[in-house]
Image (cartoon, one colour):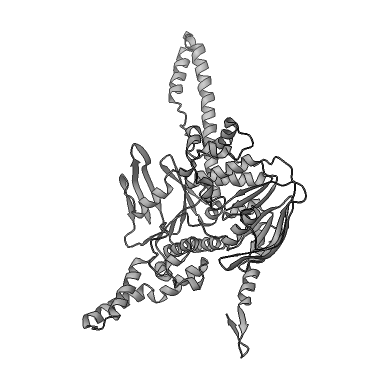
Length: 551
């Protein structure tokens, strides 16, 4: 059990939290939600002990071990991957290293023998003999191949480091698990594995995530941060949303009835206060009026952008033809002779664990990269807008937001351009903010403004939900669903993929594709297990004795 008791945190004159009291109990997974800036990550830091509150205490059941998903991707660069995971249980790792040092001694003493014996007993009690096996299982589950287990962390790319740090947090069955955005940079297969892990996890989990589907799958409770308070709701994210909206509706209805009652009492008092025969009744109504108190309904701190992609031209029947496309990156063939035709009603989700392959395909289709072999041709009625995963080049200039967006607008009127920025929650002086100092979320909202102002009828999105808060993801999801043109996209948000796509193209590890007209959930149910069996059996051959062996 972990508990916040009268927690307050002040940053200057601003109170981020005020007298927060909440208890997180064993066997539950709590989704910590709130608008950007509400203090979700800050509250996790307070619970973990990395940040001291202005007042109040964090109480943890004595003897329980707390584990945190770390955000510093370079902290363990000098360590081996497997060792990094085992460090998730600091005491177990200490024992392993002390044992190694003792056994490496040339002058092994009786005292060393006694100490080694003590360490071996504690090591066995902590299931130390299975530590490497358990660490490997976590890594494999998250999609970190065995060939990477003995590499140095510095040799891994960013997405693999994220998975290793997540495995480190999960390692050793911690009593309390704090996860800040654990699905960021994970592929959909790794997210699905993590969902199952947390569903079966029997201890306490507190998780911050912008992935609504993920929260719906794993959470038993929602802790909602709004205006410095935390309110607890039983159930998953959808249940919280319905409950919170119902509560708000009920409070507004109660206020409406009270306002009607107030009006009736005021009218009676006004009419009869000077009437001697009615004066007692008027006095009685005055007292009743004084007792009526309207509920103080503060608007939520959440703000939803308005995302509406409107194509300037209706798309024709010929949209996109891709024929025998191949591309090799750094000696690895990421696209191998792929072909497909895009129809005018297609909204295609590109899935699979090979992130580079998807990004490469989108860059080719957007005209930013040439294929090694093959061709692609857009129809004459099409116009394209592209959302890149890496937007560094877009904002490497000295323009302010308004100047930057005006450069992409056919209409150069400042008021017109600011209207698109306003939809994306850039108001007032935000328009003169330099684009190079924008946060990750602000840059994404700028790119979405650029796509809206383009009037394109074919949209290409490469992981558009990265850096967005829940409200912006919801607005983007709705905008993608109602867009009347063609969409080609990759996204780690399961709900976006499921509710938007009517066709799935999976890019396999060998660079080939599987192409199905179906929803994402139907695709997973019908093909996932068969596909994994195919991958497994393709690695199996027979030896000289006719026995099957895995290559």
